[in-house]
Length: 340
Image 1: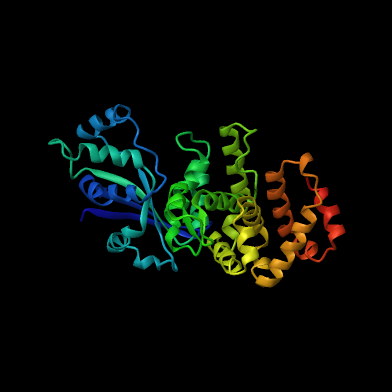
Image 2: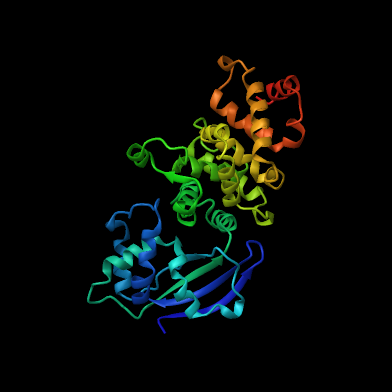
C-alpha cells in the first residue's frame, strides 16, 4: 500500500487523534501536493536555489523531514478503530498542509526527474480534529518561537482554510471583490473577519498595534492565545459568527456590526462571555448597543485614539454585559471614561 499508519495516539488537550504515517514519494506528489493549493493565504514558494540542496539530497536517497497534515472534520471524531489507511484516503479532501509546504513543493519540482525515488518514504503526522480553535491552539504551541512564518500569518492560513468563507452566513470578500460587487449589507471584508478571529482567539483587541515591532507583537499574540484556555471552551468562533448573522436582520445592528472596530471588540469579548451573550435577543442587543453608543458620544474624541478606544470599550462592555447593560447612561459614561 502507498500509505501506511504506524501509530495512533489521542491528544487529550485538543481532543484529536494524532497519526504517525508513512507514504511513498509518488503518493505524496499525487495526493499531498494538491493540498497546498487549498490555502488562500499560503506563502509563495521560496527561491528554488534555497531548496536546491534538499532536491539533490532526495535524488541521492535522503529521508525527507516530516511534514504535518490536518484533517478537519465538521462532525464528531471517528472511533479509533475507524482510523485506517482507507479512512485517510477518503478524507484527504478535508485535509490541508499544516507544515511542509516548501518541502512538498520541492518534491513536485523533481517528480519528473529520472532519478526521482518514487518508492522512497516520506513520513508525516496527521491530526484528525473537529475543532478549528483547538487546531489553531496546537499549531501555535508547536510553532511559537520559530521564525519562518509569523503567528498572524499562521492564523490567516488556518482560518482561510478551515473557514470555508463561502459557507459562513456573513459573506467574506476581498477589497478587490468588493469593488466588483459594490456595497452590500451581507458582505464584510475578509481581512476584518480574520482580525475578528484573531481577537476572539487571543481575547484581545491589541492585535495590530503599530507601536510594537512585529516580532514582539507575534510573541504577545501567541502568549495571549496560549493563555486563553481554548481547549476548555465549548463554543467556537463559527458559533459567534452565526450569532452575529442573526443580529444583522436588524438594520441598526447590521450597520453597527459592519464597523470593523465594533466587530473586533465584540468578538474579543466573546472569548469569555459568549455563553451569556448568545441568549440575548436581537431587540435586547439593539437596545443595549444604543445605550452604549449614547454613552460613547460623551467622550471627547480629540483626547482619545478613537479606533482603539472603540475596540477596547466594546470589548469591556460585552465582557461585563450583565452589569453594564443595566446601568444608567450616567453610570455607563463614568465607567467607560475610566477604561480608556
